[in-house]
Amino acid sequence: MTENAQRWSDVYSIPLTLEAIRALHVPPSHYRISPKSYEAHSVVPGASIAGRLYVLSGACVKTVGAWSVSLEAGMFADFPKGDYQIEVGGEQGVRLVYVWPIPGQ
Image (cartoon, rainbow, N blue to C red):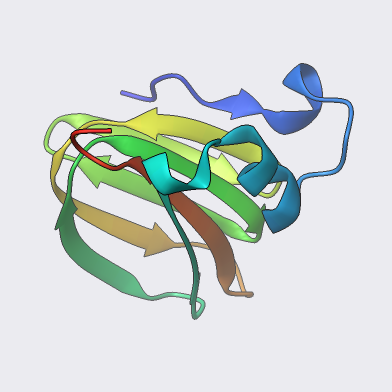
């Protein structure tokens, strides 16, 4: 099931960049912002609290339990907490930016 994926350009009139993402999530002390890059055809497991995932380039599928979202460059989605898996599609890698609220802020 694909949930809540949005195109950046449908919501914002500025280009999707790390700086634009940082400008949305203020004050900075209330958010953890983590850029990541993964190689093509990789599968990356992990666990996290709920947050938002932006895709700067490439494409991927993020799965958290029964929740799943397919994203490509210029898209973002809110994801639930839990164990997850990122599958990188295509022939190029993917550049992502994870954003999590810092609990207690």
